[in-house]
Length: 179
Image (cartoon, rainbow, N blue to C red):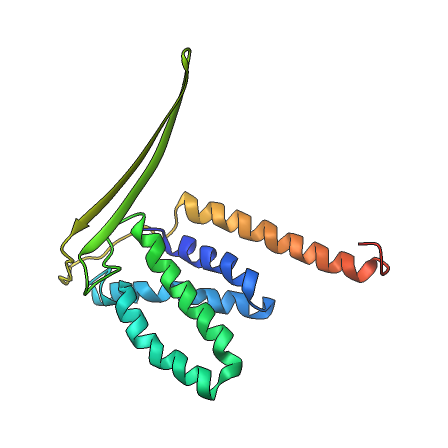
């Protein structure tokens, strides 16, 4: 699974494209919610199910639509970010993304290449692994907290945030019509 930092920063990068800057850091925290099940020592459990997520959020989105419409954009972004977490997990570990409709799923994708004296060779590979979902409580639930993926995303997020700040400052200093 992507580490918590990678989940957060991926959602941060998505949120910054569609949210107000002052809300982005907070909205991106929603990406960590599916892993709340680890506190119960049953990691990748019900919070990792898209059908159950939609079952829970549909009435909430309906309520927001009819009673609190000004928050509809926030609610939609929150749902997108939550489901993004589950989608990212699908590509790294068995995930009950379609539970209770289907077993746990892992989509393994690889593209290997070789440059040889006789030319270039590219070999794509896709494998969908399924196993029954296992919601057994564990004595220990462990996982990576930070990986090179999370750190690389951190560098990208920091660069983009710095560029935004530079662009914002430059707009304040450049006369109208220059850029």
